Amino acid sequence: QVQLVESGGGLAQPGGSLRLSCVSDDASFSRRAMGWFRQVPDKAREFVASISATGNVAYVEDFVRDRFTISRDNSKNTIYLQLNNLEPEDTAVYLCARGRGVPVVMTEDRYDSWGQGTQVTVAS
Image 1 (cartoon, rainbow, N blue to C red):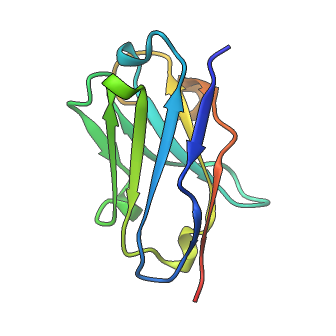
Image 2 (cartoon, rainbow, N blue to C red):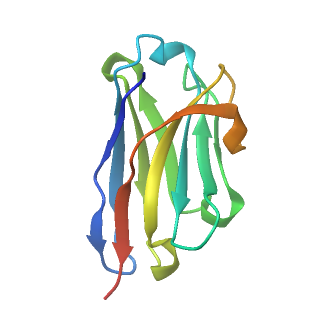
């Protein structure tokens, strides 16, 4: 069972920034794509970003592409999501997930392990 632990969430003002981290204990971390999703109550989980196993390819969804950046450090078994210019609509639980393979993937069924999530709240 792979463990993924997110951190870095919290309360931010509109226009502010947060940096989320996700640490994995997966021995195959450097051979797996990773992703970020977000979820609000009573809504479906929403894909945000994905990064390939080596980190050379990253994909961020259109609706946040100009504000969010995904990255990873394979030496630390960690991925990151930099959130800039936050908006109240970004309020959600952000979850990281491990991909089933190397390339970036955008759908939930292509991920096989999930963290518990970290809450991001954007309010003035």
